[in-house]
Length: 93
Image 1 (spheres, rainbow, N blue to C red):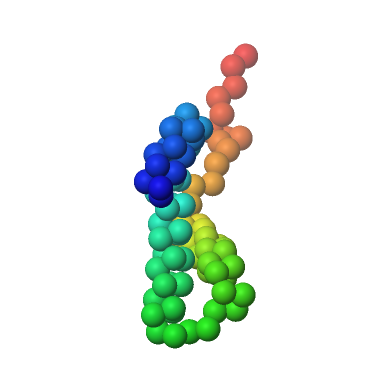
Image 2: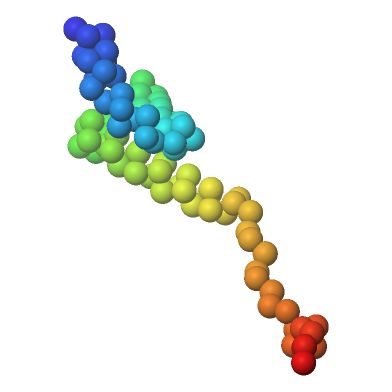
């Protein structure tokens, strides 16, 4: 039943998902895998999660915000736009 549900979702959402850039899709899937992995690791260690399964959303939000901050930190900065000096501009006339 789960396989049929996933296949049906793939068929239904195929066109909208094709409009999403591939790197964005990979980024979101990475955040989700990290959140679920953290949750299931905690479950295996016997950690009592606040509000049970809803905490996956909080973990996902944490990973999303943290990763966006880190991406902004490592993104190369653009050089500031420099205007030509008045002395270097030639005047005709």
